[in-house]
Image 1 (cartoon, rainbow, N blue to C red):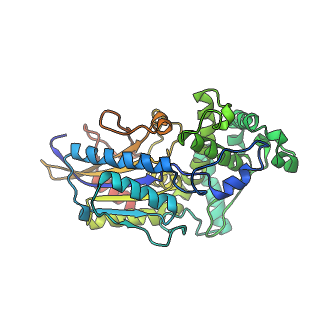
Image 2 (image 1 turned 180 degrees about the vertical axis):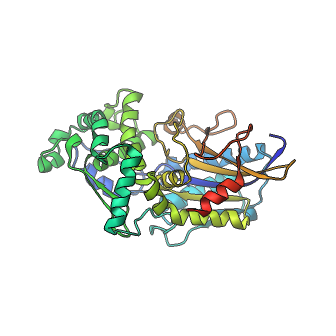
Length: 385
């Protein structure tokens, strides 16, 4: 590695631990007769623990950069967040940890609580021809002509587990629909200026799974996390897989990923072309990371010691390196993220207790012996999106 010099880093981060979203909270009240525990922040906001963990991550990231002999001054750092409280706050806490006492502005386009088009995973074409092309592409991606139904069959044990935890049959929701959680009718639709829409078991299950995972990450007591009814880590992983499949279906299938990620990819390309900042930090959402990995052709991956494929607070770290001998530029991509245990225990990140670093591979690109890809290949792929 001594023959390589790290010259630029671009981070695409998911926000840190948040509370359940407003629309999720409304649903949660109807799917169980039980009372949900209270959160410490407003709906959809970064929690106190989320802020602390991002501060830890920033402090660790500073030490990691120093290990790579990557020196960066505040004027060489560009931080840009979606104009939502949880993303702006994540950027603030991370930057405070990485650059304590230094003036690093947190840039965002709008006043808080308005989605920035760069991060907004909305549909911009709702023509029937585009919708049919997307459906065919998803069918090819999932190797199933049934789109959602086959997936729901695979997830049925997870839906049944959720139903037992919630006492779903005694809920308002069940009384209204008279249908098991695993058998809710499914539909898929594309509407301009809205996220791709899935209704049915997968959507409802994802909302519930999201809330239960956030409870665990937030350090809720065992009794307050799923009312003490998640008995094993295997069960927690089953629940997380509902959300993983939802994210993959909507945001990783190649055609939809390309459509949704285009504004973000163009912004990333602009950052690389300008080379004005050595360190660029973009803070968005799980859908942004999923779409970027989908559109750039990342190979499927399994993250060790995690059950989410786009973990809360996780960071896609794209690194541009220069070979000192041939002066060619190369790149590598790592997924940096906290383990389930680090999140649950709110562990401080240090060089002795680091977050996970998981190297990601890209389809169609050749790695050299040191694990680097040619930078020119990445530029070419981005320019073709």
